[in-house]
Amino acid sequence: MDRAIDTSVAVVIVGAGPTGLTAANLLGQAGITTLLLERQAQLSEYPKAITIDDEGLRICQAVGLLDEVCAHILPAVDAHYISNGRYFARVSPSSYHNGHPLISTFHQPTFEGILLQGVQRFPCVDILFQHTLEDFEQDEQGVSITVRTPQGTLRHIACAYLLACDGGKSSIRHMLNIPLQPPLTRFLPLRRTGRRASSSERWVVIDCVEQVDRQEEPIIFFCNPARPAVTVPAPNGGRRWEFMLLPGDREEDLLRPTTIAALIQQTRATQPEASTTTTSQIIRQAIYTFHAAIATRFSQGRVFLLGDAAHLMPPFGGQGMNSGMRDAQNLCWKLAMVVQEQASPELLETYHQERHPHAEQMVLFSSILGLLIMPIQRPIALLRDLFFRGIVQHIPPLREAVESMRVKPQPGYTNGFLLPRTQRKNDRYRGLLLPQPTIMHNGKQMLLDEVLDNSFSLIRLYATQTEQSRHAVDEAWQALGVRCVDVEAKRMQPFFKKQLPSYILVRPDKYIMGAFTEAEVKRITKDMQALLQREMINISAKS
Image 1 (cartoon, rainbow, N blue to C red):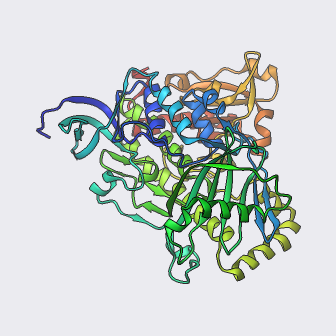
Image 2 (tube, rainbow, N blue to C red):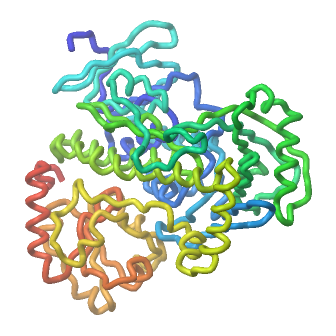
Image 3 (tube, rainbow, N blue to C red):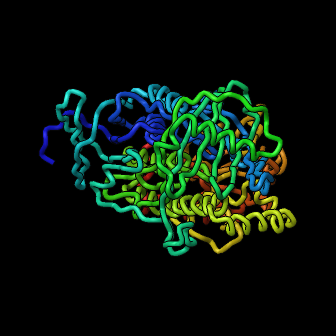
């Protein structure tokens, strides 16, 4: 790389959407010099995503923006599914496994504005709008990128790592020649066209403001094969409507205000006990093509794909933006350790290893959910209704799984930066996302993550205060830079439901590296030391 370099930073992020802004906040927290590039003159004014899940809110908590975000969401929203004027399923999740409601709705421009304000807390992070990445080169020493400025001139910027958060049409992914492919295509059922599995659909999306505040309403899926539709309540009297385009539909016809008003009225009429009709002021309408695809790999050398650049999914599971935020959290703590020479670059290989399988599960889940709840063939819709009304509703475990949203794939890693398997019962917790109960700490009630912070943590579960007072953590863990925290066992019991281990070792992103008993402490300590010696430089030398 022999170009004249204008600027040198540790990390360059391309794309100031939710994923890029989340990554910038996480790297800023870690003190990593970061440059965020956005080709537009400002953040997008268009609301695209509209739901944030409990994991997404937990990541907002991790970057210190939970209160600001929660002030602008509709929390704990239910989802109802209607066919032939009758409900066939209701999702009303009450679990706070991650400390937050499973489904909340939000206004994306407001959310991005909060993330942008969060980035501005960190002097180590700079943001350049109207700057477009034109090209890049990478070698063993770093990445050199060429950027076009608003004046049309070119700048050359050096960085150690490049993060592509530049959306579904990612230019960086194309430059790397990384293809997209449907998720597990061989397992997908035949699409409603009768041909081989399709990976895209067109929908008209309408955002409006209603005169009557109906924010207590759930998300409603109108599963009518004649025209599948969905409506989602949003903060401040907002509401989104989405209608599927059918074969033969012309986009210009469905975008007419008179057509939109008729579609909304006709759809509302099929809702049992529909609320009073009110006038909706349309603020935006557009045609979106929903894709189901995933990049064959999430990284190449020093360049990483995140968010829509790495995976595209239909909106039915509400997981597109949330999956991008998970990507950012998984990668950024690893990047911080490598940049700060606390870890070898081999640690970054676990990003693809861990995130690709889970993202693929989410793409597949969203695709199958769309096939199940939004078919346009009447025989399939009839079979669906019979299944839910005749089987699911009469089998309590199935009904509870649907109502509590336990059908959603849970995050978990089988391979990656984890302690070695022990072939013991506590292996069942290895690679799972740690639950986040409310605990007592220094006489105050608080969520667990507030105590753990964004570091490696060793949680010791105690049954009585006497047990807690007798506990002394081995100095070896402290030497490894691991934060030691005591938690009352009964706080975890509702989440694990089985016999609890004595210790839980947790990563900065709150995934469990391993769980073990008192008798296994010495052996696990050696395993951790061996893992760090293989993957990392001695942390104690840097702490």
